[in-house]
Amino acid sequence: MANNNPTKRGHSLLAFFLGLLVGIVLVGGIVAGVIAFILNLKVDSISANKDGDGNYIFINGDPDDGGVGTVMDLVKKLGTMAKDYNSLSLGEMEVLIPAVGKLTDKLDDGLGQFVRLEEGELQAVKIGELSDFVKGLANRVNIATLIGPTPDNAILTYLCYGVSGITYADGSWKGQFKAEDGKFHECFFEMNEANGKISEAYYIDENGEKVFAPYLTLDNVSKRVDGVCNDLTVGEIITDIPEGDRILGSIKNSTINTISDDLNSICVQQLFPDDIYARGTAAAGQTNPVAETYLAVTDTPMPAADYYDNYIYYEEDTENGGYKLAGGGNGKLTAEEFNNGSYFTCGEGKILFDAKFVYYTKKDGALEMVNKGLQNEGKISVFDTNADYYTYGGTSPLWKLLLYTAEEGSGELSETVYNFKNISTMITNVSANTQNSTLRELDAAGILTFTNKADLEKSVTFIEGGNPVTTKVGEIELSRAIGLFVALWPST
Picture 1 (tube, rainbow, N blue to C red):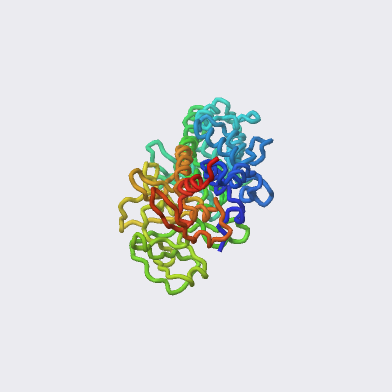
Picture 2: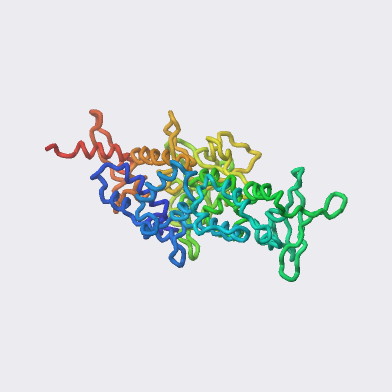
């Protein structure tokens, strides 16, 4: 099993971001060493933030090159970005988030074949003005350079023939042409065999007749450029998005017109599932194990006779009745833990429905949060037994402090979906959660470290409200522990 200690697991980028936020709310002097460590953690030292060649993947950790030196600098910069997201330029985003450079490079390469761009011109474009920028290129187009595009150039092919959704299979290229009536037709290409360029694009109508797609003229330039903004997706422009690229992967179905809103709506859960949910053993070459989704069921878990590493396990909830996830709330156990207790399971690939988790459905084979874009995004109040819901289950102890929120008027914590639009609420939430977390939970999250775990099980008795109270050390909340510490401190 992978070690849950963030330091030993390669300093996961967002795990230490959480550590920073938690450190902000701790009372000075109580855990000063932990606070100093988190606040001054160098982004450059986080191994998960670099590829095999030492290049930054998610966050630029070089302050001399426009990046951030410490995790505190990162939080400040993210807060500034969240206030006026649309005013950010692609270049500014690229400086902090190197993965965005793949989008600007592809746009620059594609657009540069039919219009001359000044050095740095594309990087200077504001995200909220990207659509207007692309539309404005029409007056600078040299039509002669557009004659004979190759089908692997999505932008140029659309401009010339209005064809999108291009694929290659069985030795030929195909695409989709949108007619004047809004109907899509499967489109084929006549190719120049000498140079591999398109000479014509056509589709077959209901009468079996070949209909040629209108090619680019000065009269339809504006309309075609509008189509680039409305019809072409990031996935068509960037055909080689790596499977592990969470940022570009999350917007691969976005168009240029929707990219601003879509980037602003990307949630934490989409970007870092392997850090938030993954349990188990990391594969060769990976920092973290890959998070798995489970089919939600309403069946009562059955006693587990044998141990399987990929199963989700439950234990009886003696305090509230019913069952609760084992393994500190994430449902994963080691073989040793399994053999030393009594556990239950719903079987391979399944997890018992719990309203506090975030849930997904599958759309065209891809996961999509239920109630996407709504106030209750990801949450299910009534389980539909005729629908298939999927969930990662519970978060790691560290991420629970960041993502779990108590509903107003209720002490029950449930996972909340956070994105750039409500990142300030997430920071406030960490403050409240930390103060109300027990010492056992903070130890599990790696925020406080008890070298001797047996100390958490020791019983202590103290006077509170004039009455003696006996409890285990691990069950004392942080705010309560601070109060006890202050009460025991000798007066001066």
